[in-house]
Amino acid sequence: MTEQILRVNGVDLCAETFGSPADPAVLLIMGSTGSMDLWEDDFCDRLAAHGRFVIRYDHRDTGRSVAYPPGEPGYTFPDLVEDAVGVLDAHDVDRAHVVGLSMGGGIAQLLAVDHPDRVATLTLISTSPSGPNDPTLPPMHPSLSAHFAAGGTPEPDWTSRDSVIDYLVAANRPFQGPRPVDEDAARALAGRVFDRSPHIASSANHFRVGGGEPWRARLGGIGVPTLVVHGDVDPLLPPGHAEALVAEIPGARLLVLPETGHELPAGVRDLFIEHLVAHTG
Image 1 (tube, rainbow, N blue to C red):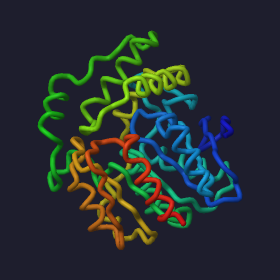
Image 2 (image 1 turned 45 degrees about the horizontal axis):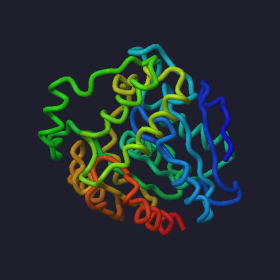
Image 3 (image 1 turned 90 degrees about the horizontal axis):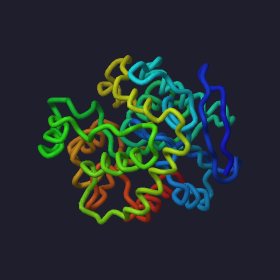
Image 4 (image 1 turned 135 degrees about the vertical axis):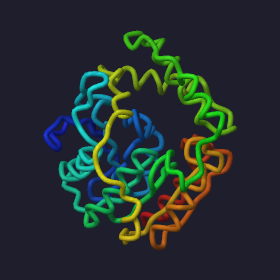
């Protein structure tokens, strides 16, 4: 694996690859506030072992990519879409199998709509055609609504490694399904995120990013094979969001992950990799 800083779309983004550039490319796009570390090394290694050239990258305001002052994102959602295109360009990839999780799934949808020539297949994980506030789709679970209404997880001391690790682990809990969580592994991953993120407080800028037009009405124009992957107990985006994607993207297929929330936990990765390899074959 090779990590590098790339000049992309006018800014510096950090990206890392696994496998051979001669293999079909898979572009992994993480969700809101998430650095590329959340596409864990073992997952990327296993995907590369199946003959895929895996590309992951840090969004703006995450990891080692460009950062903006907290509360002041200097970019729009369409910029994040163009960043994904730029990452492909920087790796001399004409077309990739695009995989997006949560907000990354929204980026992936727009990538397929606006740049159809760059997308070989589409895989949409824990995402929605329009987000959690669309009145035509199921609302978030009442427990998660109550969590947000109470102020969510209190912010940490962003300069303290232990405080940030505690925060990142706690902030994930309301989104998780009933599967047991390996707390040691979760804390180790959170520590890696902190260690690679010199401006970690800026990651919350993603919640302020706007711009762009709704794209749901354009989903019917997606013409590539699409796999929709969703947890059966996702509290943020209940399964009706996935069902809407399958109904509105021609030929899309649905994979439901059992006992899974708004996440891609270790316990379902064998199943997911099996389907992803078949989908991108």
